[in-house]
Length: 252
Image (spheres, rainbow, N blue to C red):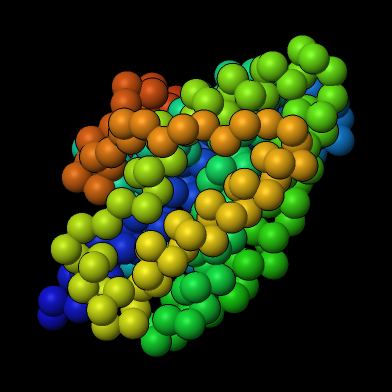
């Protein structure tokens, strides 16, 4: 019973991460700086939504309360979401989106790589399937970091500021609680310290290629595992959940 309860907490975390990140990227649809980037960001958004659907569907089976994917996405308030703080950050300009994307994509890459070793069949399978997508996501955002950092003086300055601004939210990606720590001990969840070590190495390698400086570690914003979020999540949910809230049980 305890393992099931802990697993539910982890599934909420994983599903909420990809849902909110996907929603943020979806905001670029028809607004991308070029047609190619418009399509690329939208496709990455769809990849994340696909992962979300798989996670929420499995969550519904475990909880067995008659819920659907839509219930998890559209019928919860911000204090009931457990996504990492970084994915709810506003898109800002293109460099802000790329910085946020790279830092989170790199986390997802190493998290899923470790998760393939999970003794939970669903999580291991999800990770193996998602890795094919996330590897592209990291390559896309990482190459843009390099292109902007090693580009003009203006692009270098902007992407460095974007990385600096996002840095204080990176610690929250690796936050754990007693439920997740227990899953790690049982071989269900990966070791977050190991994930962070590999993430740090990837980030340092890309920043070096981009001739950018890695920000110094500072106070890290945390609290998402307890349902604490910035005001930006509430604004995002207001847009995302409007139709379901205005017309409950509406169907296409």
